[in-house]
Structures are given as C-alpha cells and as structure tokens.
Amino acid sequence: MTEALYIRLAGPLQSWAGPAITGNFVRTEPRPTRSGLVGLLAGACGYGQGEYPEWLTQLHFQIREDNRGTLVDDFHTINPCNIEKPPQKYKKRKPEIVWWNPDDVVTSGVERQFRSRLLLSIGKPIEDITYNSINHTPNNEGFTAVVKRTYIADGEFIVQIKAGSREHQELLAEKLQQPHFVTYLGRKAFAPSFPFYLGVGPDDIFARIPTVGGEEPKKILCFYALDGDRRPHPTEVPVVKDRKQWLIEVSKIF
Image (cartoon, rainbow, N blue to C red):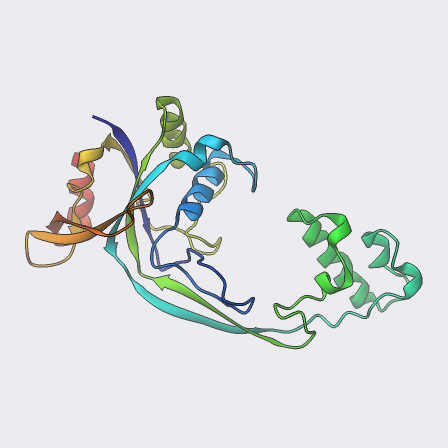
C-alpha cells in the first residue's frame, strides 16, 4: 500500500492567492492551491524562489476540508513615497549612485537608498530598478492606492502528499519537521497552528483521521484531489468532541 505524508494547515488566517483581478484586488482561493503547497514544501527544503527541482512539481496532493473557514477582507491604503525624481544627469548611473545624491535632502536620500537595496535583496534585477519602482503604489499613478485582499479566517485543512520516490518522501518528512525556511500559510505573517506535521502513513488512513466538533460519531467532509478530477468527493470521517481528544486519537494513528 502506498505511503503518504500528512500535514495540517490551520491558523487564524490563510491566503492561497488566486488570479488577481487588478493590482489593487487580490483574492484567496477557498482552499490551498498546488502552487502554494509546492512553494511551502520548496521553502521547507531550502530551495529559493524559482529554484524548485522538477520532482517537487510532480507531487500528488489531496486536501481534506475540515473547516472551510470564512472569507474576510483586508482593506488598506498605500501612499506613494513622493521621493523627488533624480536630475537628468544622474539617470544613466547605477541605482545606488542615482538614489544617493549628496545634494538631496537627507531623508529623501536615505529612503531612496533603502528602497533600492530592498528591491535588490528580493531579487529584482538592478537594471529594472527605476524611479517608478521605488515610488511604487499598486496603481502606478503616483497617488494614494486603495488595496483590498481577501483571506481565509479560522480554516482547517489536512493535506495528503505523495512523492514519486521513497528518497523524496523521506526528504520531505525530515524537512517538514525541521524546515530550512519557516513555513507559513500563503503569507509570511500567517503562521500555522500546532500541530503542523502529522506524520507518515498509508494512504487509506486519510479518512480515519478524526475531525473536531459535532454530536454525531461520523461526519461527511469534502476531499479534493489537485490532480485530474478536482470535484469534491464527500467522505465519512470519525468525530471527536474537542482538540485534546483529537490529539490523542491522531497520536494513535501516526
């Protein structure tokens, strides 16, 4: 019987970004996405952005929706930096020279230097760093931008992960327990609740892991495969009354 890894994605907030409608409106998908899960695992293994090995993109995922949570809005505004544009004679110099002109006001120069170094640190090519990019707001119009994002609040999902080889499965099991980069639920501010890593087990235990809440001994939950047929598959799972009992039962399984 095939073995799989099991992790639990739960916390106050999650964000699994769907297609952006505009630069000012970014919504979350209702459950974890393939790209989000691959990125989470790649970070745990220590791979940088865009450096994923091919085998990570070939993993098989199945998601169990224990609690779909509720969608909440994050509404805020972003003001442009209003840094003075550098004189024409500085335009063709390297960014660190362009944005640090001794004749500028000190705060303006410091802000330019900080923003240019920040963009470089997150991997933006030096030739792409322009006046507009350091004076950025999502609408690129130079005035206050109104930004809206949606998140999942109080959601809980259990994810089954199947690797193509035992070597890769063992690597993932090790790194999910001791991740190279801190794991998070779609955004760095959204830390997962305990427990995050559940363990390794045969693929048929997915429906034996209990869920919390309800008076009945069984409950129907939706299972979603992220490969092939993505329609929900209602499946009956056992129910426990509280999280303490849940931890006890899960420890028996794994």
